[in-house]
Image (cartoon, rainbow, N blue to C red; front, side, top):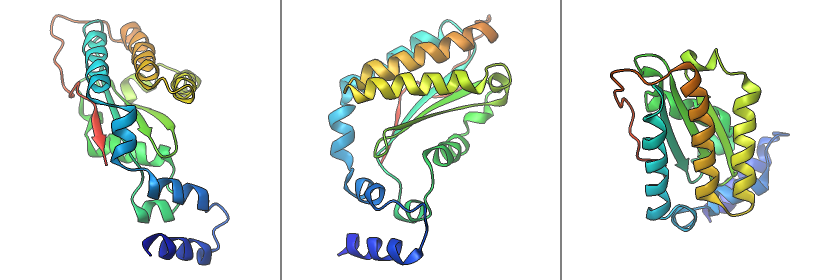
Length: 183
């Protein structure tokens, strides 16, 4: 019944950008989808990749995977990019000492990867570089290589952080290394 109500509301909205297939995909993507693609062993490997990366630079990397959008943002056609910016703010990734926090965000229902970089690193790395990293991760996902895709993305982001924020005498860990899973 809830799916029918959502679909009816979307159909009556008259929004040209409304995508019924996307709504259904978000409504049907649940916790099982994350557990299947990101079991505890994969999340641990991602955490270790972040820890290793951060030993080689002064930046901060945070990986967040979200199952699907809630109903209201979904009906408003919120993009993965818009949601990633929201998550970046909510998790205070912008609040690092050197403004060098980087969010790697995956909206699983869309299989859309977004990178949001704080101003300290964003001004140094062209947007095309961030987009290329997202594309690399998404290609790995298409081949069902979720761990490999995320780890490759972490290494690529780490390369840029290493170039502009080399490790210093004090490398405080300002953001959690453990991936965040949002349901």
